[in-house]
Length: 101
Image (tube, rainbow, N blue to C red; front, top):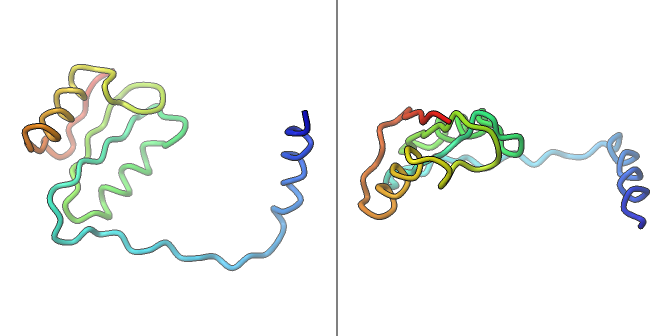
């Protein structure tokens, strides 16, 4: 009942000056391979975020699903097989693997 009015009031805060907190360094130095999954058509967590994360993490492997919607697992056989192999068999997929929609 009051949600729309309260949400509209948040715009007044957007002009406030605030000190930014820098993001912590993320490199996961010395870790086992980390599987990062991105979806080309994800409206919630866009693919560039996954690409950036994979580049920041020293041991990351990027898996891209060329589909639409939020999350990629377990929507297709390609993604499901890669993730299951990674989690169950500890088999790391090829870096840069792209799965079709």
